[in-house]
Image 1 (cartoon, helix red, strand yellow):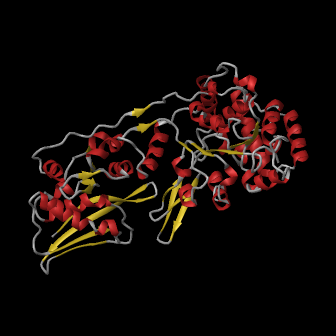
Image 2 (spheres, helix red, strand yellow; image 1 turned 30 degrees about the vertical axis):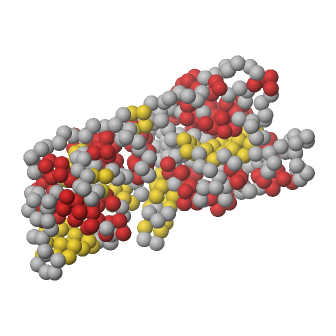
Image 3 (cartoon, one colour; image 1 turned 45 degrees about the vertical axis):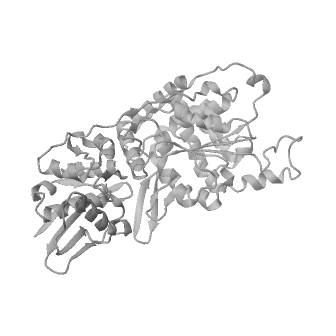
Length: 504
């Protein structure tokens, strides 16, 4: 007789169903796990044996075989402990077969039978709901999983409580979703003194999700400006929050089961490896670009990142997804993020200050920014210089437009775009527009078209640069409440494309 229960194996953000089969047959005493398990799964037999012993359940002197089907799908992680234990208990007649066959479970077992939280509870709950099964997971993971279908998520604290629930001795109440974290409001654009042009660039970038690079001397406020980008972005929609949280769940970043409506803000150090930025490693985990999905990826000291890392950003910026290829798997992660890069104008940082610049001026500036390849620089819609703030501006009290006011403008512009792309599944914001759709929504008037053609000829714009100016101009028009793209919108978009040291 073979008993069955179900769990999941993770491939990117997808939780693929796995059938856990257990057979107890005559023969020499043995406990084997087959089905392409990794080391953590193979060690489950010792954790399961100890956990059952803690409950005074002795394994019979027979051959115990656990099969994880499909057998050609790699199984990784410690979350297979609980389903293996449940399948084994059903094979021993301790649990009814119909009880374990209608559940999907995951959880790591400690040696005393307690259930230890594991990553991936949220995508596992989604897979269980699609299969029409109840999910059993550790108590500490229940608040996270309950966001999908709270009525069908049971979160026992130990294997004993799971057994009591499945046998009907002590049914457990459904788990409750965690809290929704709100904006703390600690960072506000009002804190930034001066830099009005940079603030305007932030507003445009936020409204249309346009990638942006800031070039300026050390201490000019580039990091301060970037850190305030989340404060002007609208909160995540329900679908976006679920999609983003699934990625964070696989990385163990969801705290106490709370789902955040705040857009992610990731700022990796320039010494980060390619696997850390793009994703990869032994288990092909998501990288920073996927953790920033639906949010902001801020890369300070942009030219200091390894050249290979920077070049791998080119395709994800265009496609909104990244494929992590390994010998045994090709894992796909979404990565639709807003990239904000910051750089000094040269190695010493004082290219335009004769009193402080190094002896290699102006060659040091060309060499330093030359680390950013032309094709990558061409993918930035907005390029601005961030000059030092004058002492007179620093002495002024905090004032100017607040993040709340800018956020309202951004929300209105995004609402216009949501209506515009309502029937286009592959496009969400102006930055996504391409082909005939871009020609329809961003066609400038005659005066604007003539101006753009002259600018393209004067500055030698590429075809990509030409189209990116149209996208930015469309966003500027949306912020102004204009249905048509006119010359002032084109002119402002061009000024952000061919500006100073950051220009073409």
